Amino acid sequence: MPVYQYETIPSVPDEAVRRFEIKQSMNDKPLTRDPESGQPVRRVISGGFLMLKADAASGCEGGACEVPQPQSCGGSCACHP
Image (cartoon, rainbow, N blue to C red):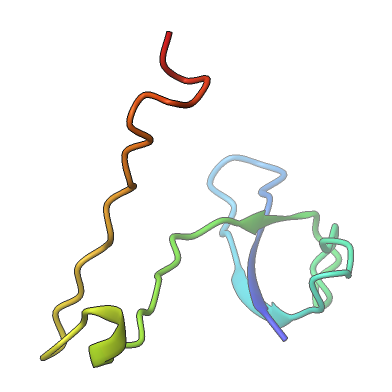
């Protein structure tokens, strides 16, 4: 189950923002209120990462992986005038 990060939305300038994490199903609607304080919240979008499994069959050896380049269509598809 994914863990989502939320932060409270300050109602007045200089009000402290509280960040927290919560496990939710991908099907759950995002929270609108902090479960502890009842303040309005917004979901924080943060960067993710991609993990590649290295093995000889995929062309990855010694932890270095090469991303395959797209194959040329040779000019026989609709993308070439």
